[in-house]
Every structure is written in structure tokens, then in C-alpha cells.
Amino acid sequence: MRAATITLLPSKVISPDYQHNLKQLPKLTGPTNGLLRLEKNRGRTTCRIVNVFTELQDIHPDWVGVQSLIQIERIGIRSGKKYLQINHYISSVVSKAITFAEGIRQHWGIENRLHWVKDVIAGVDAAPFRNSNAATNWSIIRNIAINLARKGGYDSLTKAQRFLAHDIDKLFLLLE
Image (cartoon, rainbow, N blue to C red; front, side, top):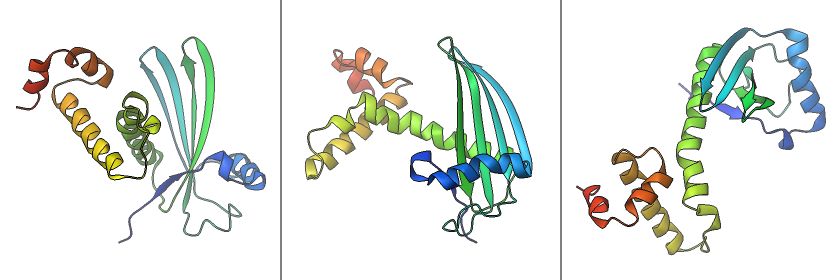
């Protein structure tokens, strides 16, 4: 059995003709399955509308094996400002909107919990070395530091840095 894939379609890599097709598809066919969720957390209110489309005539000739188009609309208020964000995903399987929504949320959870922390907090993108053993070694050290902080109960790496940077005893307690 082949593993299912879900791929985000960034608008900058899709030709304008197919961007038009993606925007027209929901108007032409209607979703096969849908889901609406309202969330309130961290000072934000977000409405997520997930629609799955499986009638994909003329979607894109290069997308062989595509069985579903998933459209996620995020409508909400962040820091007192309204926003609307629409993302499209393609998948090699047909499934329910809730299944796609959970898989996509898990992906972004990993992105936000690990990759964003590495990029922004640990400064991976600003590191002066890229193609050397030093880059690999620092990556390992960063991963150990992030895992130790999480194991120590710190959800925020910034808070962990603040509390542990000048307290060597607390730092060594994480190693036990």
C-alpha cells in the first residue's frame, strides 16, 4: 500500500492559469465534504473552513495521482485586526475534511513547535556556517538543548534560555 501524501500549494509556484482554476473549482463543483471549526486561543479568534473537492477535471496535467483538492479558509481576528487566508493542498487520497484538517494541523504544529523555534529562537538561518561539520555539530547541540528544555517542562525556548542561562545548577538538573 502506497503512503498518502498531502502537499501545500504555494501560490507563487503555480502558474496564473492554474491559480484561476483553483479559485474557480469551489464555485463550479462544490465540496464533496466540509468542516467548520471556531477556535479561540492566544488572543485570537479563528474560523477554519475546510472543504474537500474530488471532482478535479482540468486541475493540472502535471499533478498525476491527485485525488483530492483541499481548501482551507482561515478567517479571524489577530491583535484586533481582521484577516482572511486561503490555502490549497492536494492529496493522493480521498478522505473526509476532518481527516485532512487534523493531518494539516499536525504538520503545522511540528512546523511551529520545532522549525520555527530553530529558525527564530535558535538562529539557524543566521548561523555563519552552512556547509561544514560545524553546521552539523551545532545542529545536534541545538536539538539537544531544545529537547532538554522541553523535557524540563519549558514550552517556550525563550523562557528556558532566560531561566537557565545564568543558573548552571538548574541547567545540570535537566541532564539527570
